[in-house]
Image 1 (cartoon, one colour):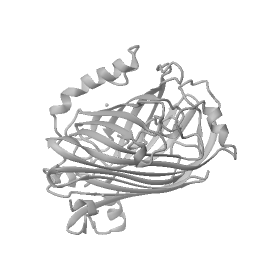
Image 2 (cartoon, one colour):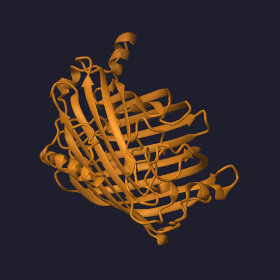
Image 3 (tube, one colour):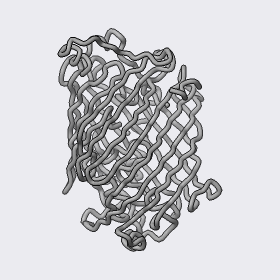
Image 4 (cartoon, one colour):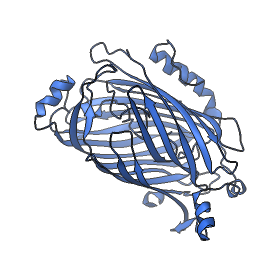
Length: 417
C-alpha cells in the first residue's frame, strides 16, 4: 500500500429503443473480455518522438526523463494555456500529470495523478486532483477524485427538448471527495467499495432562492434551495484490461457502480443511483496508432429524491466529466441518461509525434413526466494530437466539437476516454 503515498460500428443511432441499444452494445463488446493489451516495448518507445524530444533538439538540452522520486521513475506532462472548456468564456488552466509504475511494468498498470487548477474569465475557478493507482502486480486499484469548485453555470431544467431555449444562471460552490478501493479477484476483474461525498452550497439565483425550484419544476428531495449534501457508499465492479488509461491501447473497460446515500452519513435525503460504463478499443495496426474506440454509459437515479445537481447530466459523468464534446456542459439533465460515442484515432507522422481524431456522439435524457427517452442529440468533431511524453503515452489533445447551435474547443492532457 506504499503507492498511496505517491495517488463503448460507429454510432448506433438507429430506431432501436435506447435500452435495446445498450444491450446490443454490451453484447458487441463482450468478446473483448478475453483480450489483454500490449504496451510498446522500450525499443519501440525510443523510435517515437514527443515534445520533450523536440525541445531537447531545439535547445540542446539533456533528456532528464524519468525523474526519480523515492526510487520510482515518474514521467511528468503538463499543459499551461487558454482554452474554451466546453463552457462559454475563455479559461486559463494548468494541468500536470505524473505517471509511474509501482512495480514491474510487465505485470503492473501505469498509475496516474493529475492536478488541474483553472480560472475562467466568467467567474469560475477550481482545483481538481484525480488519481488512478495500481499497486504492484495490480493487486489493488485505488481511485480518487477531489475537487473544490466555484461554479456559476446555466441550467435548462429537466428533459431533452432541444427547442427549450430558457435557461437560468445559478452559482454555487462544490466540494467533492471520492475514494474507491478495488481488490483484484481474477485477471483484470476487480471489486470493492468507495466513499462518495458531494456538497453543493451557497447556491444563488440572483437573490431569489425559490426561482430555482419554480424554473426546474423539480419538487422532489433537496437540491433546489441553498445547499445539498450527498454522502454515500459506492459498490464497484470493474473490468479493465487497459494498461494505460491515459492513452488506451487495445483493450476493454467496464465499470458498474451502485451508490446509496443514507441519512446517517449526513445526506440531506436518501437516494441511490446506478452507473454502467463500457469502453472498447479496436486496433487496425500494431505499429502505429490506427484505432476505433467506443464509449457508452447508462446513468440513472433510482428514486425521486436525488438532489437536482446530482441528477444525471451531459458533461457531468461521474468520473471524468468529458462526455458530450460539442454540447454545453449541463445542457441536458434528467433522471436517466444514455450516452454513446465513437472515435477514430490515427497517427499522422510515423514517429507518433502528430496524430488526429474524428469523433461523433449522441445522448438522450428521460423526460420529467413520461420518463421516456424522446429526443436524440447528436454531435461531431475532430482534433489534433501531439505526443507530449512518449514514455507515459500522454498526448496533448486539442479538439473541436459541434452540435446544433453550439460549438467549442477542448484542451486536455490524455485521450477523452
